[in-house]
Amino acid sequence: MVLALGAGSTSGVQAQSNTLEDWLRESGEFTNSDIRSLRTGAPVVRVVGPEGRDGLFLLGAVRVATTPAQLIALWNRPSEFFRGRSTLAVGEVHLPPRIDDFRDLRLPESDLQELPFCRPGSCRVKLAEGPMTTLSAASRRPPEDREAAVTARFRSMLFEYADDFVRRGLSALPPYVDKARPTSTVEALAPLRAMDTSFFAQSRVLTRHLRTFPRTLAEGVTDRMAWTLEDVGIRPTIRLLHTALIQPPDAPSVDALIAIQQLYASHYLLASTT
Image (cartoon, rainbow, N blue to C red; front, side, top):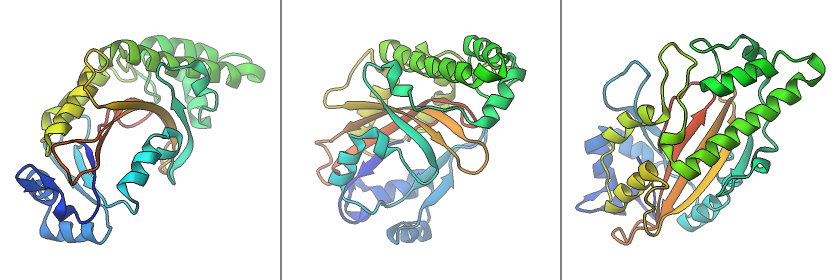
C-alpha cells in the first residue's frame, strides 16, 4: 500500500497497462461514483479483505491540493510532513536515532493515569513486557517526580525501539503484551502485506524495502523516521513511523512513491502501512 504522487488527473497516471483509477476499481472495489468523488477532492475509504479479530483492513484514496515537488520537499522535513489537524506534537528521528530526538515528547494525562495499573496481559497502553514493568514502577513514584520519571522512561523506550529497528529491522521490535495474547509488529503487518497488490513495479521494491530494512537496502530509496502524538477525538496516541520514498523510472507520469509503516502505537492500531 503505497502513496503515488503524480501531476494532473489520476486517469493520466499509467500503472503498467492500467491506470491508477482502474487499479482502485479492480483491487479496491471503488465504484464509478467513488472515482467521481475522488476527482472532486473528496476522500474515499473502502473496507477490503476479510474482517479479522484485530479489526478491519481499509483502503483509502484522496487527492492532495499541492504539487508533487512540494509534497516531496515536505516529506524531506518529517516534522512538517506528519503534522496535521489532529497532531499535538511531532518530531523527526534521525538515522541513526538520538535520544534528543524525543525531547519534546510528553505523555497524555490519560496514559499517566493508566500506567500504575498495568501488568502483562492487562494494560490500556500498548507496551512490551520490559517497558511495561519499568513504566508502571515509575508511575508509582512520589507525585513530585512521577511525571518526569515516566516521561524520561517513555522517551528512552521509543529511542530504543527506533535504534533497534535501524540496527536490526522489524524483527527487533518486541511484542505488545497489553492483552492476554502477545502480538508482534511483524505479525500484525503480515496480513496487510499479503493483501498488497502493487500497481507499479517500483512499489513492490518499496514494500520489500520496508519489510527487509536494514538487511537489504533498495537502490534509489530514501528513508526517514518520525514520532507523533495525535488526538483524533478518542484517546491521544503516540506513534513511531518509518517512511521511505522512491522516484520510479518505470512510471514517468508518477513523480514519487511514498510508503509509511507504523512501528509503534500506544493505542488502537496494532500496525499500519500506507
